[in-house]
Length: 285
Image (cartoon, rainbow, N blue to C red):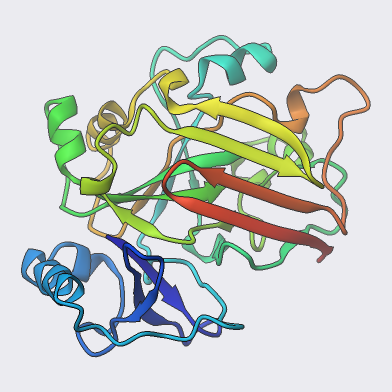
């Protein structure tokens, strides 16, 4: 299933995109799309049954904002330097273990919402990423297979980053990762049954129509199942938590000088095979 949330910010309603690309209203069945829903197999079964029976009312998508496909996100765990090609372009050694940092849940915005260039920023960068959404409580998992079994679904994430804040201002990476609007998510949460192999997805990103990133999740140093297993050794993952699993080569940081960092007025488009497409215009904060 392709689950999404539509409407004005803070007042989104749950919806489903059916096999014919028609938007369907879920508000008669569930109050929202969140961790509680993803952990409820019976509720998900009712949605599937209603969709297959053609019982869901159609929504007019004209002019309708698409919000983040997940409400009440507990935490956003991010994996750094998780693609062989991205490590090569930045001159970094591939890590021996996953690099973990966090984004606050309030950085998450809709897939077509405005992204704000922080005040004083000269090095705002783009990163298309596969987001993993947790559907079952995960603690101390023992295998890659267990890791995959705890995934409810997948989405497109844009891990916007400010490289000066991240790298040159001391401390951890978090200062360059948690600026307002720095995690567009969606358009859809695609349930795991529709993604048989998360290590066989193409990822692309364009800036002002120019292709910048053209990668594949096959390049991940630590695949999805291992990432979930590994993270569960250090923290408990709950339904509705999100893991951003890293970005392939092609970011501005990896380009020759002068590096083409983002400015107000730029338009970024990104997509992952089967998971949908995003488009954001950048403006000054």
